[in-house]
Image (cartoon, rainbow, N blue to C red; front, side):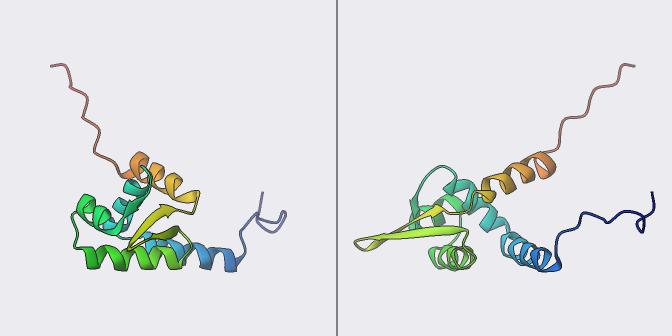
Length: 112
């Protein structure tokens, strides 16, 4: 079947542009690790920084970017701010990373 005989099922360019922008934001190891952490529950900035082995000011910047894209929510309780995942797609993204980019599978031993 040629492309001209049947319309292709393609996303609108605006949707692809939005997707590319979101993927750019998530294209950082620390941000992917933050999502892994937040998949376990809500955490404060200092906890996130410690669990991700980054400085608190770096964690704040990563969290700010992800929150700005609507990926995360935050809630202030007294002097502390707790972060949670807002986007149901983020766990799917981590699952995709684990499936496709996880630790290399051990090679099968060949019989000699």
